[in-house]
Length: 327
Image (cartoon, rainbow, N blue to C red; front, top):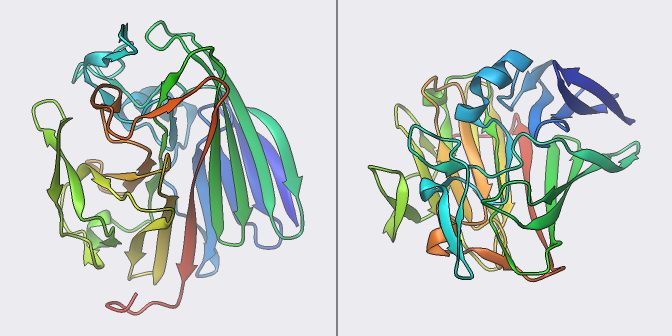
């Protein structure tokens, strides 16, 4: 049987979806951006977390605006140059929340409270739906929209659907994404990665803003050891209504983490990869557009009044059935 447990990390509300048969669970930060903060599975007869989340309220307060662990990225992901953009001939200035680069980053909902809309708990699965309504609180984004986040936890997988509706009387610009960090407890340098994109978003390295070009990319088309590579880049994974999969393999545990994202029209057509300096985890971030899309308009989603969109991604964990060089 799957059950729901409410808890807290300090001042922040959390929800655990728990498989009572195995004690495996997904922890969701309902009171802080609705992201997956922990996902623990039975590996080699003990629970292992495959998500590098927050362990304390102090960590959230000290580190959130530099790590954005598991954050909901809405209404834009990654950087907006100088926090400025023009939409329908009107200029907007967002708050600068990344002062080291003088950019706005990762949207406006990453630290917001989400309420429970619905739950379904059965012998075979757990479903929870959370919601937030943004009412133009920041002058740099004076639009209204609703966002529902629906999680499904079953066996060794969790899927996440985001539904966004424009509640304004005018069109609104939207970008959407997530910022989960994945771990197996093994240093990233010893893990293997497969991310079969053939295009990387080219950027101005002085400000980390795309220059409008896409460059060929040939690494990680097949499973490759990460080693000491530094990665902080966005990759185009655009396709026609199919799922894109990024795979992370730990040979010491014979464990594979597969992150899938829906691609196609108004879906998650980009993956951003980031390895933090501590190299204990890797962010695999599904996003609908590249950085600075409010200015470049590259894959920018524009929602008409009352229009809705749906975007989905998920995580599947597999164990004890891999041979290096084959999977």
